[in-house]
Image (cartoon, rainbow, N blue to C red; front, top):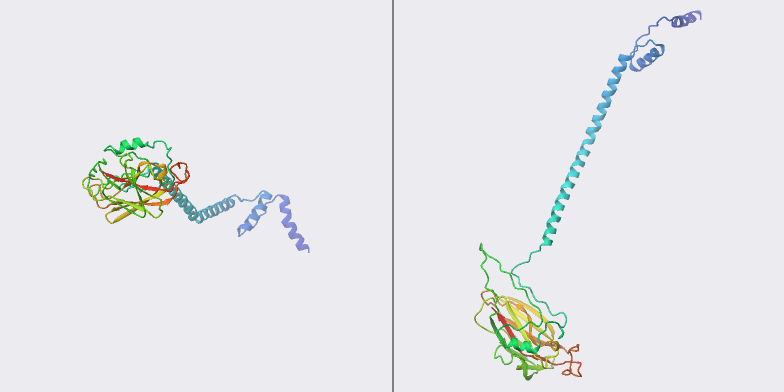
Length: 336
């Protein structure tokens, strides 16, 4: 017991007396830190070189950790950069495409060389329509060599020339309508009729003084054709007029135009109220060949649709309200 007290006093007394106590150097870092802490508290520890070395180690570990995180995140970052760049390029291409489409819509181009098909008359044309010629004007036009006035109907646009196989397109012959032919009652050419008809001495071309045929039969029909005229060009554009008499012509009728061009055939239908129209009525412009050669023909077929009961009914109609008769006169074909 005395021996243990002596050892304790020996360890404590030098500290009280201010005598430095030499301590064994620790062998590990934790022990060293504890040792240095004791030294700092006593004012005698020499811990600075060892602390600097430990700080350098911690800094190196931190740098390695940052580099490892950067390397791990780099593929995802690189993929995001490429994705954003791709989206930007796609957006630029879409913007350019939209600009091109907008420019195309702002200046549309037409397809040349294709004749426009005239459509049927959608609604009846009234006699009070502005620009409709009077019978006197129609008679004056019919008696001249020029084309009769256009009363109504559908027209087909003139086809545009297309250069084929040559560096410079050959100009097409001009459209002059210098050639023409009449077909029908009294014309001596190219007219047929079926069903029950009554002859009329007036109402047709020229000037409503020519012969006509009229009927109230719903099964009656009349045909006109181009025939075999010679001369002229621009068979790709043939105007067709039907002459509507000013007497005994009142019912709704249907004109069906059949035009052939080589082996091709096209058909057009027009529903017309005869009571509202008098004189030459333009059905349209059709093709019977090429600009320089005739390769087909044109036929006009008229059938009965129904009686007319519109605002143009007058005393010539049954009871002044229902027009039951249809009339057939002449048809004119014109080309250049």
